[in-house]
Amino acid sequence: PQVRMKMLIGLCGLILVLLSSVTAQPQVNSGNCFLLLSSHTIKLHSEASRSGVYMIHPAASRIPFKVYCEMGADGGWTVIQKRTGAAVSFEQNWASYEHGFGHLTWDHWLGLNKIHWLTQSKRMTLRVDLWDHERKTAYAEYKDFNLGVPQSNYELRVGRYSGTAGDAIRGPNPYDGQNGLGFSASDRDNDNCDFCIFEFDIAFDKCTDIYGGGWWFSGCGSANLNGPYRPPPFNQRLYWKTWEGHHSLTATRMMIKSE
Image 1 (cartoon, rainbow, N blue to C red):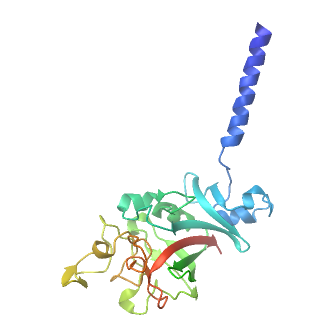
Image 2 (image 1 turned 135 degrees about the horizontal axis):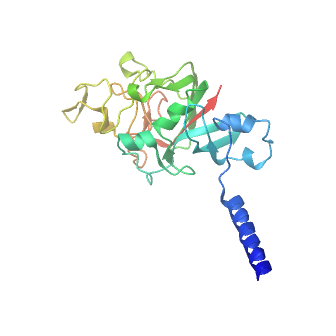
């Protein structure tokens, strides 16, 4: 009986080891997807070089967390926002925008706190990919992307622009500029707008009242990729206005990568 009991315990232990090896999320020491892909321990054609969900641990964060890594020839990009339709609502409050929502393998917002942690220990490039209802695409890249501390309402900072979509974060006019502003949501207003929006002869004092979602609003700026989703060509609450003639967006993606 003792021999059988030892064999049974050994078999149970083996089963637990096998189950843990199947269900375990990859644990990595890298602080972002770029470092994961460029790590000397990662081979180019290994499992870890494929796009997907990975566990990372930025130096500024006390705990590791999961992100979606878009792996490509130019390195691993950490996806912080993705939209392809109306199934995931971006009409969320401050707490949701701070902690994140949606599905990492699909449409989601990573979370202001996680984006802040990612941008504290490394210089980051922000890439914005846009798709319109005619299947045309454009992109904008910003060097030195950074989000400030929570006390600054996650103030947005971007550096040099390049791309084909135009610099909507700075905007064509000084009052449209969103660089240096804090984040706003429906229940926390940090924009620079005081009765400056008029629609149907009604004055609004919050950008989120008319444009919805959450964003680094100014008055109220040339960009908002988190507004309510509408079928094209009527999707005027989801916009990147410096992409001339392509204001009706059908899909967006925001990613960051170490410089």
